[in-house]
Image 1 (cartoon, rainbow, N blue to C red):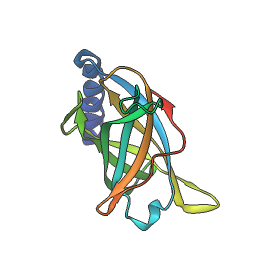
Image 2: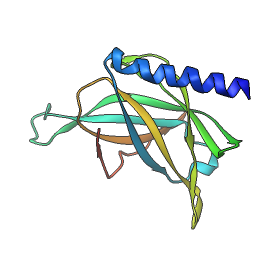
Image 3: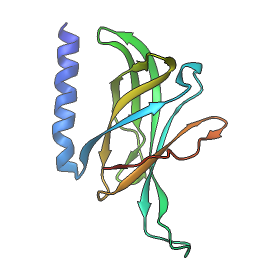
Image 4: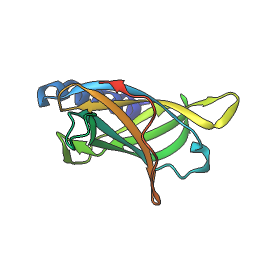
Length: 146
């Protein structure tokens, strides 16, 4: 019990110090079809940027990679542990954070998780892809303002 209380205090202190580092904590709710087969290793976030190739449409620029570390059953239920691998638009290793897993009743291979994202860059519109050793999915058809 002491260990989990200490872990909670350290996590709270870490979150309290983040605003001083110039980031904003946002949450992203993401649905991952086919997660149960174990091939999804994480997601990549892309931020919408002004047209850079002259076609008159906004483009997407890589913003961050979130890697899934472990899926376990805890006292809170099924939990996905993940880490944000970018700090202030540079590669870096963040804290390992937990996310409660919700499985779709009609399709238990699809999960929904709410992830914390420490956004260091300016606010904007973001989309996501899923990745593994074999490549990356197409961008999500939806986007979110963060």
